[in-house]
Length: 399
Image (cartoon, rainbow, N blue to C red; front, side, top):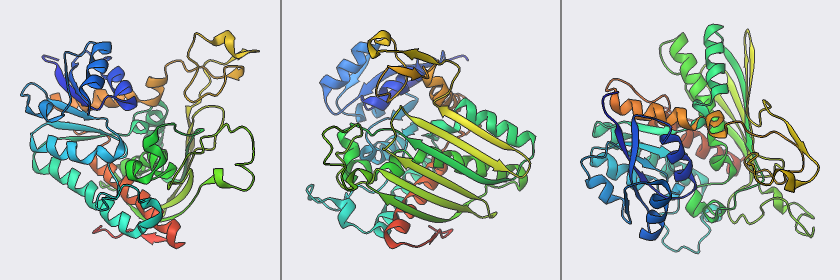
């Protein structure tokens, strides 16, 4: 590579940390600036990582001629505006999942719990409108939009894709799950900042992978993606079951306001195949990410987290106190599955390398792009609509 792609981060929280860690593994990428809502937070993030410049307004990044790629790693509710502004400024964009959603932007009273007040049909219409606006803004301005769905880049899923291709497989049924014991971020507790609960916040990962696999299969078999056509779903808040609040100690996060902590959906595709997804915050023992593909001539299982190249045991938690084990693990005592390279197994460096190469190579398009993010929004909000009305939702091709 003759030159480096210069990257500006918008956001300085959890996602910004692992995006930066992924970018620093790429020799032809350089993070040159970070912006956050407060100058102090941006400066602290930059100082710890050796980033030259820090701002309290992301528009300073967009004004810089030397920045090629903007990486939007803000909370969910703050994805849309920076992407639109970056596109208008002629910057290529990466946005963390989910692409966007509905956040009650038309209801100024912040005390209203919109997850309980706004119909999910109305949310579907507005969320899809928001997502389309982001995709269309990038298309209109001739910039590329990378959708940071790391499951598409995880080594296990990439191997599954190669196996399915080698077998010329017809994927009949897919099963996916993401689960852990719950987020402690205040943004995740209410619809106004998260855009939904477990089904959006966690389920967007396996859903994105399912849509990606059927897209690739369709291109292989027919020369065009296989599209989702209908959704059926159910959601619940399982920490509100009878007797849960009476226990003196809780191992699961229970501070949810107007969002679900469990959801399951069935997505139907135009070729007659189906995908079944479960996402929840009621799983102890660390993060659990699994994909399974049942095809006409093979079967492939992907253990993204946990995986078992290394298995360890300690009779007491202090024994492994100085060493990282795995994300969301409640204790280091007993048997565990220490992650060898968690970022790599999750696909973070691979996705960022793809997006950076797309800047350097004019004909290259991201494996995970804005259209995939748009489909995730459509299917997830159709699932909320289905759960609220207790019926199957058909996706109109014009939506």
